[in-house]
Length: 219
View 1 (cartoon, rainbow, N blue to C red):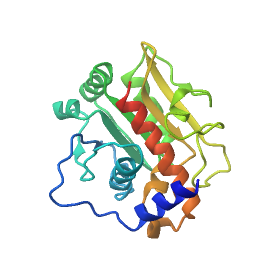
View 2: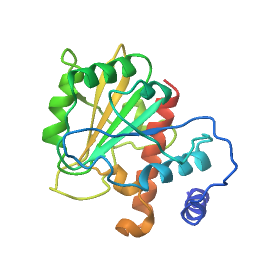
View 3: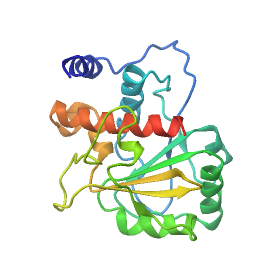
View 4: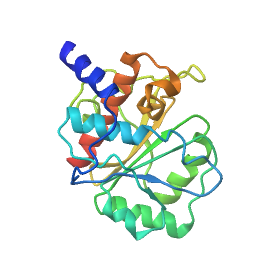
């Protein structure tokens, strides 16, 4: 634990990557329609990429592109993240494209940044009308990929006093869509000065994020 905290402290002071470094993989942020702030938490994915590179031996580019759900470019990214507080709308074409992406081996992580829940659930149903969104138990492998979370999803920010929950779409035995609710992982990935979270809270968030990345990359 002491060694891990030391790594985390080094990480906190070294979030700028080398200009000429060559990265082997990229992850993306989903830019969706409907009015919700898809651009929330601008420092979260770059920080998560750097943390993963330093702790679980990934080689992720911390320069995060924005990708639209109807674009063919989504197939170039093994992991796509989505967040926000408000409304989300996928067209029929966008929903079909996301499903094709997930059926082809892609992974979508949706993180409710508080207020997205009533809007995102109908859109998930639009993508998968034939598959139920189910709650993942603490025994699911995503909670023990690299860091161990025996109680399941950690609580990062408090909103309505509800416990954090992880939901998923399972396709042919594989978790392809993860929806994290009442947790705010993305807030925990943000730079320290954004929310002034204690180091141990940010560390939990980043460790859980690393588990998600590790799972997505090793399906």
